[in-house]
Length: 499
Image (cartoon, rainbow, N blue to C red; front, side):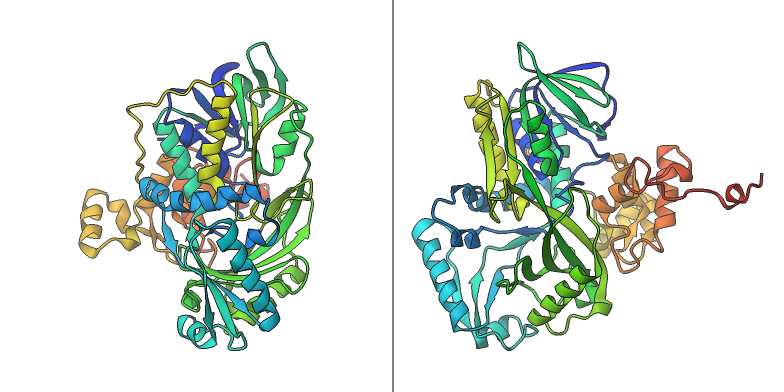
């Protein structure tokens, strides 16, 4: 069940090499696993979905607001084409998915006229999108009694949904692997050169020969393309701040609440998550690639904007915050732009780059990538034994009482609650490790210990002990997210120089 981690020998041959194990790379891998094709996916991090995929607001939308740009905004089609695909995909992979709907609140008549134009564009240009409708102040208050009473109404989109992006990426990778794809983590691409039959790829764990390359390297997609001069685009990282509220206030709203920005760099939302927290934000700014730090001003402004939407939100209910990146292609990339194209300079090299929210576009973008592979010369023969299903790790807290007793009788570790905030048991943590988690974050993103109010203050040491035991390593060797992110630096007696 485990992913291959840094096990590459001196030379590996594959037909299709996917570079990047985020939501796009894993979606392409799973789509290709339907065919009789030799596929390898490499990810530079020690686990799946740790780039932009994990720094995500968890929204799945049909991209109606993208129509405010221009009629020729064709690349947004991957967003709305993915909407009918996403829910069945999550059902097959046993990943949580819930339609919450979106309420784009309206402050005044001037904003109302802009929304009227936006709705007209949607109906004219993309008639098969799910229709939106206007609601007045009274209906808005009935649907969301905790939303500010100053809004005169809202534009309601019933299709907006939420899921768990990292769990989806992990599920896609697991299902692709079970159907024959070689999924390898902890392997960084260093250089690429062309050969007679395709490409020679130099990595930190050896060389890979491939006939085709799918470049889904996320924030580094332009860097990978530049290794071959396959494309001349540049990605500009725009950092966004998102705050997370305690579950105890998770019922303040049940829809995604969105307000039009009143200043550059603002995207004002309060939205439910699949795990019953509320997310709020997003403050945007240009930043150095990979700089995921937050600052006081971003946090302050995000909270002020959230309180404009839902006045009862309080700073004391914030349990954590994170920053992620929206990558603008040549600084022309719009919210929902998704570029999926074969290089016109290097045959058999295909790049995928997605905007916000990237998870929305992934199923349709993966199908487009497979079409391009066929156009580039890859022979595709469907497999008769493709299995689309994958079972998730059991969530003990969600089981009926009788099922809990049965599970504990089979494995007593399910009777030991390790994470009190999220009610995660030792049995779930052990299963996460069996499926490939080798770090604290790897366990956290699979079954949520450390995502509650105390942020791992109580369960962190216990999860460390379980990881050390199951992996056969010392507690000092357990890391948060691989490499040098050690969780326990020293034993006290070592620090004091005692034997």
